Amino acid sequence: MLRRTVAAFDNWTVAPMTLDELKSHLLADIPLARAMALDLAGWDGRTFVVTAPLEPNRNDKGCAFGGSLASLMTLAGWGASVLRLGERAEGAEVYVQDSHIRYLAPVWQDIVIHAFSDDEAPEAFAAAYLDRGRARTHVQAECRLVDGTVAASLSARFVAIDPKRPRPAS
Amino acid sequence: MLRRTVAAFDNWTVAPMTLDELKSHLLADIPLARAMALDLAGWDGRTFVVTAPLEPNRNDKGCAFGGSLASLMTLAGWGASVLRLGERAEGAEVYVQDSHIRYLAPVWQDIVIHAFSDDEAPEAFAAAYLDRGRARTHVQAECRLVDGTVAASLSARFVAIDPKRPRPAS
Image (cartoon, rainbow over all chains, first blue to last red):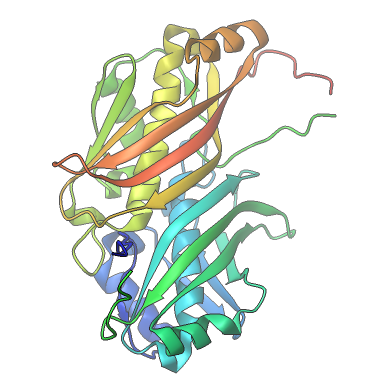
């Protein structure tokens, strides 16, 4: 029997929503999102941009705390996965399964994260979800400085599950 | 020339300190550590245990937010690296370079993280640091449920740098 992979991250039931609605949902339901002063800057159909001010996310040196970067990049990746499902996502549960994070340079400014699909065929994610009620996608997220430097990066795998569909037998 | 790998995470100058002093330092200097209500439960010379209550670290389902798990596991790995240097760590700057995180099961209880060396010869880390003023170590961190289940795991590489030593020329 297939062991259902469950994850602790962001397994919301997602209905089609605007960025403002998504932001309200995150801030209302996740105390740490409020503590980080998360903001959602945009979604152009390919890239999801998440921001946060430096001050609540600093370490003792005054640059960005790695825990904040890890958390914000994972949230950005989750958001990019959810938003790619679009209206088809109604009822989908989207989880992170694993991630690889690299810390490349300190961040002395407000935090800006860009998240986008790392799949060769991104549209296959939504198609597979519609077809089978379960699909995986790879997402890349980058913390980019004003000068374009990538200060941290995340490569992660997310899964979307339709809880109304029967699970595969094996 | 060797490009110095800098990281956004936890690059404190570390003096020998007790767990209480380390905790005070973390809570005073990192707003997110306060928001997560971080606590340091113990260090036996091999394993460093970090805890946090569920409530400030929950998601909308009421289980642990993956961002909190990522952040707490990385902090635990950093602490395990620092504590292994012991008194030799005075002045050391300890950074995370990269990490691989797996989310295996939801966490419906207060969070307990165990972090320990993943090196074949853990003592080589402190020895190399003393010898060369720069050393790397691999750390494993696990979020363990009361029944022993590993609900999330982190495998990470940390580097300790003595800022008083000249950097290698290449």
